[in-house]
Length: 113
Image 1 (cartoon, rainbow, N blue to C red):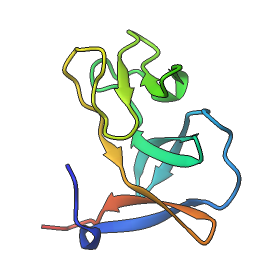
Image 2 (cartoon, rainbow, N blue to C red; image 1 turned 60 degrees about the vertical axis):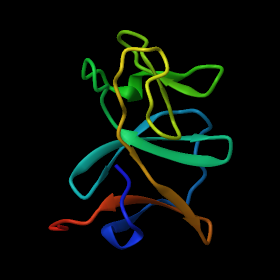
Image 3 (cartoon, one colour; image 1 turned 135 degrees about the horizontal axis):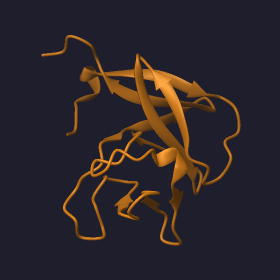
Image 4 (cartoon, rainbow, N blue to C red; image 1 turned 180 degrees about the vertical axis):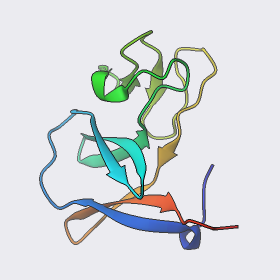
């Protein structure tokens, strides 16, 4: 689901250098999400597979830069969360932006109607 800019709270992730293609879990506003830096862009998404609940931090990116679940090898596009191996699942993704060399992740504001 896409949100309008006014519905998002932009939370600082880091101003440090990220390791390329290393999936990490971070905590933002009591939410644990996963992030990965790939091709000079930060991607943020739900931390567990929507199919099995496996931790994506134990998964990897394939040669097409798709996120691969470590349990059943289901694959998801980082850009939109679409399942590309045909099982019909969708990954929740979060918008990211870079401002003044600092990465931010957009999380829906609390109590937003």
